[in-house]
Image 1 (cartoon, rainbow, N blue to C red):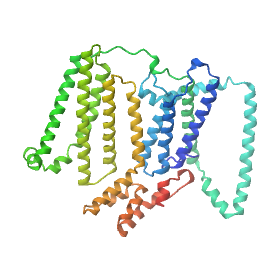
Image 2: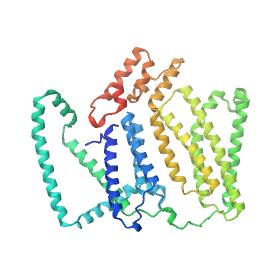
Image 3: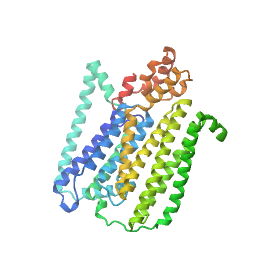
Image 4: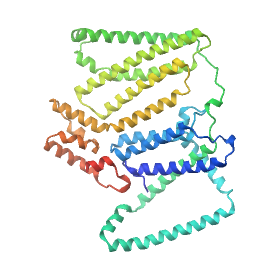
Length: 444
């Protein structure tokens, strides 16, 4: 009943909090009587991921942008799964991120088998509880309509709280309840038989890449990166005349080009570094020295490329305007810079077990920071800044955004502001208690 499927709202946080409270309560009660060898332990990593999951669901209470909440909802599912798994398991970050849905099929059979083993007294107690619930529903069905007919204010309150029921709504409720219920069972199933922590498994000594085998491609790539950055420095100091002679572009055009290519390079370079770090031989001090030296060098050069890509994107947006996609891709590039810093730390330590979860944690923090900044409001404000400097304002693009942009529109002339508010007003229709959202309330 609480989940508003088609828009962000407070109901998502309420439903997520209820599911988290149910799982936490059952797990805590079960842990009190569990045998020590069952591995029921408390750890701060589980607390962090639980808080992160609820914080991501809370974005729907404060921001109206549907695309932003969709990203937060997916990230909340990953964080919730990692909270259930707890400490690093032997299965790896991707299996841990999908642990709850993967366990759901087995959880249904597990719960069914367990229900058949309950003592006979439990059935009688449940029947009495069911009868009490039925009587409660009957009383409410009789008295609420009588009181609503007696007072118009109370009738309006009841009308706002009780949804209009039809076949579609009942089907949606049933499907959402089934989905969340099976997911909750999956979480309890994993908690009942947690995967063994990664530290309990013997570390693999299978290093398949000799120094020359990985050093040749990584060294060649490092040389290419250094040459590329050297060319950029020459262009920077050579100025407009040099770039026009060599590239046929003005320096402004040169600075605006190449962002997408550099973004692809930063992602693909990770696909080179991480397998090498995992598989390269490190038996001798010389092997370890070469591994640290080359991988730190290529990671450092990639960080410079990331800075160059961010500068190009900023120049590009100043020239052509700000969009949500450009802001989102720039944020991803900034997060990649943080990941490369983590990679350098992992290379220096020659230890990677902590890296995947740290990368996911920084991605979660970056997404929450983006939500806190109000990305659509930021885009609208920057485009209005460009308009005040004499650039063109794409009113149609602003009208396609959510009502998160409404506070930024106060700086526009009355005619443009009124037109945009009229075009955004339909987004405030059909508000119910579970779809309440701070941004839409402010806009209203």
